[in-house]
Length: 340
Ligand SMILES: *Cc1c(COP(=O)(O)O)cnc(C)c1O
Image (cartoon, rainbow, N blue to C red; front, side, top):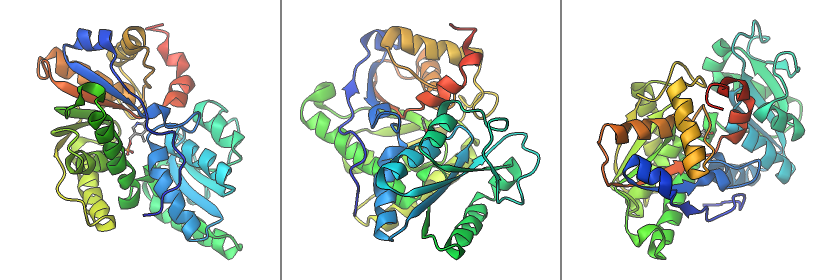
């Protein structure tokens, strides 16, 4: 399997002692927010494989998609720039009236303010095509048409699905579990497997990779992923499909660990947090120096907090995967006045 070296690895395995004490569990955090600088987060591990495949296919342009504040789109924009690849991003804008039948309208500050991930996308020189939520539901077709138009204009596009989540991208998280296993073998984090891994799930590639990798490398007995966009049934179906896709890419993979998708931390809507979730985000920063975001990691952490409050995890060894997302927090600064 061809893989580029894009991430800063291994990422630290840390024990936020005061936070662990507050939660009553043996909490460890895999700092995958630190897979890079501004490009950091869980998507870089997937992009190591996906962009290797793009280069192998002699692509000169990468095409991908996401919400307007997509961390995946921003990581792709920055990594593509570093590799000298052109980058085209189809980004969903809530409330956008029309988008030229899914071809997208060009970026403007009135429609998509230069904040958080959008600022970084534009700094990296990515071409933004803003599309409606209705077009976004047909994102694979939208990107296929975009790629065909690019090809007709002489470019060599490579399309990466939402979140970098296909079988190949998921292998980035199989390898992340291999990395954690090597840290345990070296005596880090108490030197023995975790009871449970917890993280946020949206497009499902991280969960599929963690479930397969935790089994292959004996890192943990179970995965609990908190759905942050679609409901549990939809997210579960995505992960099920990706488990098969990942196994088709790597025949050495066996069965995943026991896994489940928990939808109780979704909050009011994608990217909208509750006051209680913001309290938990503030607690992580104040008791652990950990900066979580209101779209992904903050919701997963809040879900973990609630499991602990209900006494479901007393004393267990839990690995929380911090998947990044800082620019998304900074873009939502105005919603944090209640806890700051
Ligand atoms: C994309 C993302 C996730 C979810 O990962 P998936 O593989 O899409 O399920 C979690 N946290 C952050 C910060 C992300 O950007």
